[in-house]
Image (cartoon, rainbow, N blue to C red):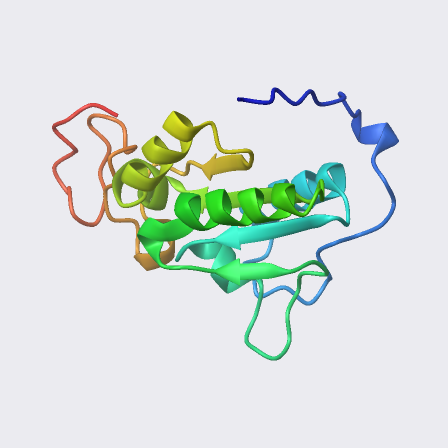
Length: 166
């Protein structure tokens, strides 16, 4: 049976002061992905695990054994984020834990490589939050086109403009 969870709207002024991303990130200065994720994690809270496929977010966290995240982070293969989150969520629920499972993936890892696992998770009604950080291209590897790149956009692999729609 599918359980529907509700979320409480949290205003920026009401965000917790606790930071779950440390200041030692490997993010580019002013990285909007890191800033967005900062607020996602503040809203989700400390009882959260983050699932990250190959994308800029795996760069943001830094190099082992140091990490910029103050919560557990699972780095998984491009195509496995939704499958991993589904299993983790099911395991937490079987243990009667309400731990938040959050996937934070780019548009390439979502719209292209990860869509099959995400489709299966939707079909099963898996209980996790999947956030697609859509920057219209594979940003971590030099701005190649993705399925989410808009029509006409010029990227490294579509210098004349992408002929297909987003």
